[in-house]
Image (cartoon, rainbow, N blue to C red):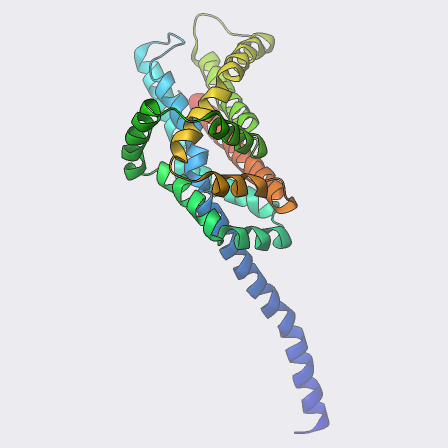
Length: 271
């Protein structure tokens, strides 16, 4: 091979190599993101609050004509579809991706203690998990948890910022429902200050109830998991990687809610 040919071959390889490396890195990060989000499990968590609010507002608390309320709730259900929420949340998560923290999260998720807790969390949202909830609630009623167990659960909720996440999730979605009602209400239009007043009252009610609701949910969800395992799980969320994961998940889900809100209100305006 001539000197010129060797130089050309070197230049071609040098030019192609970075693109191959970047492509491989992109594939690796996509797989890591999917693994993290599936283990959380993000899709079920993101759908939990809109699903509950959908059930509540099907009862027509605003007093719209029945047909109009039904139409509004159908549009809400379409806008807040589980798959759509996951898609938008994943895109937002990708923007906040940090390879160093993500690799640390994956290592933590693969630890035996972490797998036990994450498995219980995923199971909670399945049909089998719903059956087990009935049994777990009954057992907790028969043998109430010790104060030390409640304290550990409260610590876990605190480290994961569960209350703040749930409050803001409820507020984002509730505001979209109030705005939709305001669009459909033919009797009178609410001003922005009135809407914020309604939302503010709702926030206060949620704040009063949320800590107990979270405690009850986590006691049922992690029933049977020993204290040391739960303590290790809670402790992770105080590490840099745990804080990154918590913040990234929160921002991603709330971004998905706001995207769903835009879809919902846009479709309501066409009624």
